[in-house]
Length: 412
Ligand code: PMT
Image (cartoon, rainbow, N blue to C red; front, side, top):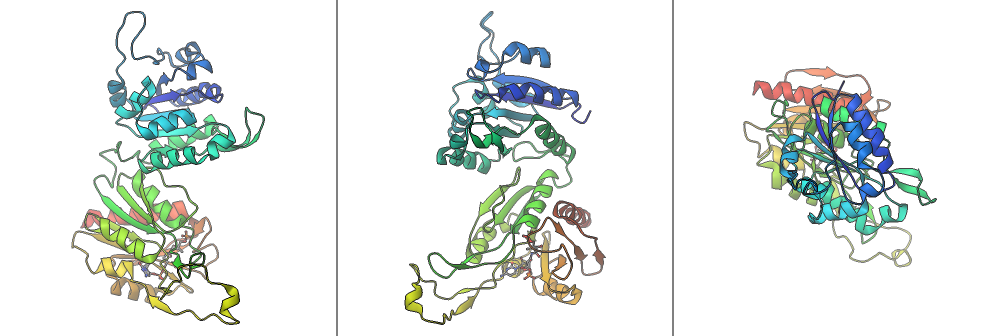
């Protein structure tokens, strides 16, 4: 019973995937959750309220008023009661209305009054899902802290094959369990007893791209996975996280404010904007040390360049060092050192010159460590100690790092 005592509002909208909502509700209830269904009028065309009220043992809420006695259903009290609003399936229409604050049915007013985190599991035809309008609406919602449970690929009700299938109920339930287990948090629904509750954390992640011309750039192999895992763990442990990310293909982490940037100069500006208010900063980005001195405005023509191309580079600011030298005594700063050998001396040197409190050393000579992959192998260095960890997934490594941070701030 991993969801014992949790109050979950399940929102159901007009999509053929509404039939999966019955299984989802059963899975949540089996784990001990108390479920209240709120349906849009279109949702009722796909699955009957009778089925859902029988499963939840509660009347389904769909209208603003009870037609029998005129009593009013309070979306405000649902917003206070819930630990989570989970809209599954979420149709293109509902996502669009949520993005634009259109409150023309009970589910949408419930969303606007919601004090708990909101999750959506989109379900629609592949072209609707891929459409720029839908993707823009999803970006707006993501930016606002709504967690998107990505749609899957496969056969769709239209007979076509592609991306747009609602995630499976068992997968959604597992994600909900994981979320509550690891200290549920969101910009709106933070748990007061989470160890990083009340802390503002800045995390840099991913590579930076430095323009050569309008189509070419200098970059590196960072995928952003290490930094995104850190952001997710910090958010789950109660922090308000700003993730300043270079270009990656990763979705925004749940409950994290993600600021997308391209170059080192952009990353510095975005980091400087939040540094003064941050209690903790973690610099996991692989920032380009140099950028082309004079990027060309259009596209350089190969024919005009001849056999050799010589580029002149200029030094980029060191973001960690720049902010490290503005550090207040109550702030905790964590740097990364990416070395080609496990060079602790060099990591300690970087820690000193950048004014970091902790340094995470990862070495490209260790198999499975560093760029790109799902794993990393680190040593955690402070001024007085070094702790080596075995090869782990980046999520586990992030948890080790965040636990060390929590231990350290408890002593500040
Ligand atoms: O993104 P992934 O594919 O998951 O890979 C993760 C990672 C290998 C990128 C990550 O674990 C890592 O090691 N990040 C730091 C990479 C790096 O640039 O290391 P460095 O030793 O060159 O830099 C030292 C520190 O200064 C780092 O905290 C870095 O973010 C910071 N720095 C460096 C240069 C610069 N101009 N500005 C900086 O802030």
